[in-house]
Amino acid sequence: MLLNWRALRHIAMVMVAIMGLLSFVPRVEAAFVPNAGIVAGEQRSSDIGTVQKALENKMVSERLQALGYSSAEVEQRLSMLSDAELHDLAKKIDNLTHGGDGFGFVIAILVVILLVVLILHFADRRVVIQ
Image (cartoon, rainbow, N blue to C red; front, side):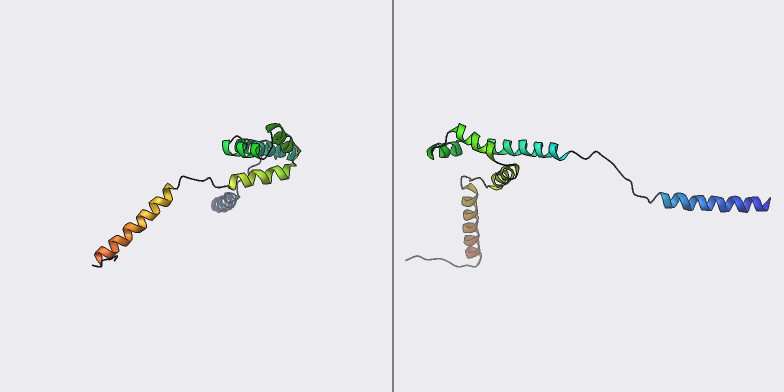
């Protein structure tokens, strides 16, 4: 009987060790890998959307008209671009910074002037212009 309890204890310890080791196995997730053609098609449609959005801007369309390009010519030239060229163009459009009205610049100048005035006031200095 004592032998059975010892054997049962050893089996239980081995089972605990095995289950403990199995619990550290990383979880694996699987999914379908999209076809390269589908990804390229989605990328191209996304890039065309980005370029079209930029072309709908009033300033851009006026500038293209001033240069002598009609909207049909622009569409034709866009359709002739390769996927890589279209992607580069869309990336460059995304990286463009939009011009603002200068409000942030004016606020920054006012803050700098206010700081200079406060520093001069607390240092008991006066600026006299003659």
